[in-house]
Amino acid sequence: MRPPTASPTGAGGRRAAAPLSETARAFASLDLRVRRRLGGLLHGDEAGLRLGPGSEPEEVTRYRPGEDDVRRIDWNVTARSAEPHVWRTVAEHERETWVLVDETASMDFGTTDLEKGDLATWVTGALGLLSAGPGNRLGVAHLRPEGMTWTAPLPPRTAAMQALSRLPASPAQAGSSTGRTPTDAALASSLDLAGALDALDARHRRPGVRVVVTDFVEPDGRTERPFAWERPLRRLAQRHEVLVVEVVDPRELTLPDVGPVALVDPETGHRCEVWTSSARLRHEYAELAAAHRTAVAAAVRAAGAGHLVLRTDRDWVDDLARHVVGRRTPQRAGRRAPGTVR
Image 1 (spheres, one colour):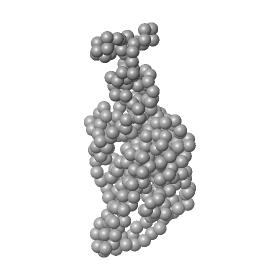
Image 2 (cartoon, one colour):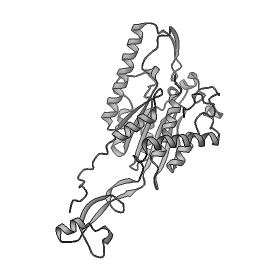
Image 3 (cartoon, rainbow, N blue to C red):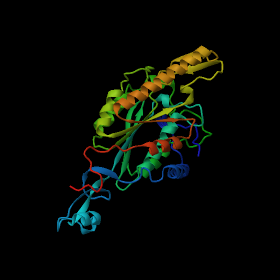
Image 4 (tube, rainbow, N blue to C red):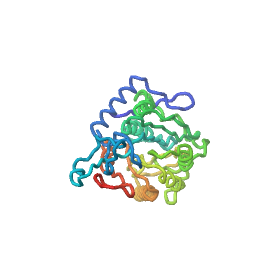
């Protein structure tokens, strides 16, 4: 299913919610795509850092009559040692996931069938499907020009449905994703990505999963390190498992040869005219864009967070699937392999 690019607006410049029937169809379509590509890869409960009730064996210990469950006797180890042993499990607990979604003016851009803001919404819905499990919860933090808004944690599939209700109600309805103009953006709150990361870290300190969906477009146009968001991201990654999803449109990487073009910065409202038929201009633009992407990747890696780049002109579900398949869960320090006798 190809999401529409236009998005109607409601009161206060907010995106109008799609009718329930369209939301349900979008949810069913996304659920089917995610299950086909990612079925069983991320589903389930969160493994804890201690021993306790669970299903995954962690270590084997001597059987203690009256304390241990006889159903957990490891008969292979018992036969080798001539003494009863039981396997103990890793405690499993519910996982709390928070998604920080960048909804600033720069996300209201797209030159393909999908705008960056709409792709961020689809990704939030997919994360809800992937994190579904008994007791798991998913909350969403929205970084908007007027400041931060918070959606209370909900069961992940419910949160996914709620996120998808923000998609455009009809492809025939025109307008930007938020109904803001560049002038509005210039008069908006000064809260940036760094401040949003600090707010997320301070408000929800329980260890869990944190996902940041943004385009890393700086209001001042900065393309070189250090970025203001590097330190807050590093602090966030010290407490949580963090994944950064970078949303990119192809026109942010290269300019087409189409002659004179008037460009408007959605963050500041600055307008300029450029001659795209200049090979030198297109080359310098591509070099600067590539350097920015490289600097962002290095900063995310240095912060200790995962990094996934999704483009509006590609099959983002396929890119997400490749990332999940290549994902490696780090081994906990001092962890014993299953079957190790203590």
